[in-house]
Image 1 (cartoon, rainbow, N blue to C red):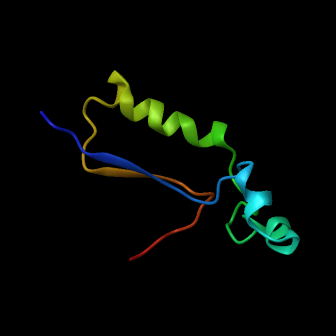
Image 2 (cartoon, rainbow, N blue to C red; image 1 turned 30 degrees about the vertical axis):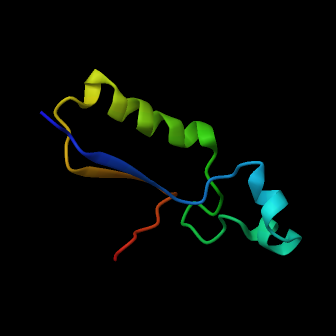
Length: 74
């Protein structure tokens, strides 16, 4: 069977952040989420590994929100 799942990341710190935003935005990046900081790539990667592994063989139609506690409605 075909399974469809996804990962919805919040603000994730990468080297592109300081090169893409001015100093004020860089210092505030991720501060608007409940954990009050951006995530790190190593905190996001396990969600993808889980979905690609056999451990998620009975998971479908799900979105894993790795976003520091932000609730997104849309």
